[in-house]
Image 1 (cartoon, rainbow, N blue to C red):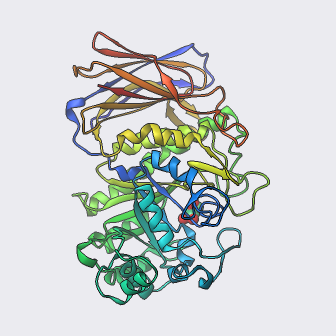
Image 2: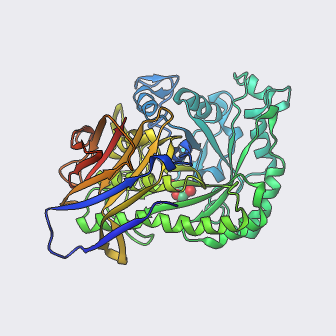
Image 3: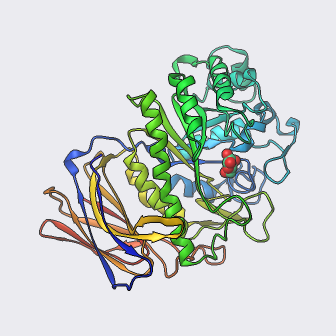
Length: 512
Ligand code: AHR
């Protein structure tokens, strides 16, 4: 990889100067790898109010909707250019029996959502509702099938139900339920977290089970399935080793989950009430995903040097304490400028691994962990994380451009060292270069010089997401406190770009 990080070390307690001086060099002629748009994927789980109240209110609701889907949420999601949406879980997936969610609503059985607060699930949002939502939003569906408490037959029939256009029994049932044409779903997950809520399995056992399940998942009418094996939890490298060895090319993708979370015992910390030290710790924990990915990738490279199998980071994001006063087990959390930084830094580093990382799904799209959108009754707010996904969407399917970077670093809690600048660049199909930057420092401006390695540009446009405090967030009372604005502090001077990044800011530049 061309990108090299030159860094000066600054310890958090040293006397401070008013600004940083940083430099990056972009190599526009050296781009080879495409940033798979699916890295900008999302995740919808039957958890809390993600589905019910968040995406779906039902056709009889007073909340303005299109066939049961909230209009406000639909419109907001369309602006994100969502490439794919994972469903129905998460842990929920391995207790979900898809046949309970088809046919007339009144005859759909209810179930208890044991993972998430014991809420009664009435199955009114099922396969048709999910796949029609994907069509409305314009994204590809990614279905996670039940391995933990399901059967091979159940999964095989689900594939047939959604993908067969022939005169097969499941295709006939689908037509009976009002859908003529098959949806042609490509992405199929074979279980979720099979080492935990998905069945508490050992990797050897799961590997065999995976092989058995996929034997019966057919490619209907030329629609080749992209099969994704349930992968490791963050630091469990043995899981990846065993799966690569025992499953190999029988899978198209291997999943990995990594959360920016403060620990499983006791408090994970408030989403909005945190100190500057907590913020810097969060940056360190979020950036550690790179080291974790590298280790999994090294194992994958050993068995698959041609990089045919994709790494699918199909759950990532921040995980804070549930908001006070909300239902226990529904994992409803607020989303502040700190979450925006986690999104920006993570997406910027994902781009570097475009040759192996084929998909990533931030958890969850509405009303749960690091969500894009929060709803309450008929109200909706867009979170700071939403704005990052909207500002960064220009990188989808663009060519990754290598960069060198020179910036200061900071030593933070847990002995992690974090660069105070994050940067990524890509070139889109029209030749426009997009650069996304984050000045992680909460106090100091960053004077950045961007050298384009003799590449000529004529104009620069910018947008910025910043606020007065890192704790700032959007509420139902004040929904637009954090929102992007125009950025005019990028100037062309003698073939270089001089950029004044304010403290605590995230910027996207369009260079033509
Ligand atoms: O995102 C919440 C839960 O985290 C998911 O259901 C599960 O896969 C993971 O443990």
